[in-house]
Length: 270
Image (tube, rainbow, N blue to C red; front, side, top):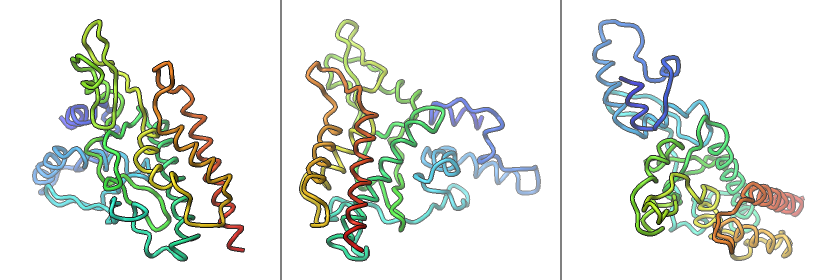
């Protein structure tokens, strides 16, 4: 029954040996109560995600404990469009200026690490369909953490969601996850045509890198290259109307430019 709930919530087939985080342990005087608590927790998809991924990813909130249907996670301040830098950086040493520019570069690199992690390190790709500052937080070391995963789906569930009836491409948009309408059969394709990186570039990186960084320590040429790379990343279309096939090269270009930005900022501090 536990495996069935996980399959229903996440679209994943898990073996009995993978169910350890949810199993209440040996039978005892409190076993029936533990079982009732477990069942109440399993009805909450976010709990299932957090408890499944907490030992596999630094970009997911760890579950600290539970009591009945309540569960506790690490407390972190969420991002917000009301913050000038999208995340609370007021306490960053040297901000605004070089300190804030360095923090933003560190956070951007952590977003790239999260994208690579969610694309490559699980048995199925993890799609984020509601990307906005409010759904992420940062730790003191600038690690990005997904704190709201109500709209996160592994590949099998994503395909199931996208494959709907349609009359045009607009019918195939599920929040930030897009598909295309096959007008021959009036059915959305099961394959997502954009990706997590494109949406993060569009909704978060553009905010940081569409204008010059608030630091004279970063060369104008490097800032311009970074702006162009973010624009290239955020645009999911090419003239032929197909999705970009060079997403990995854009990823590595962004990573190289952000690392170069950090080096220039660190040199300026010496």
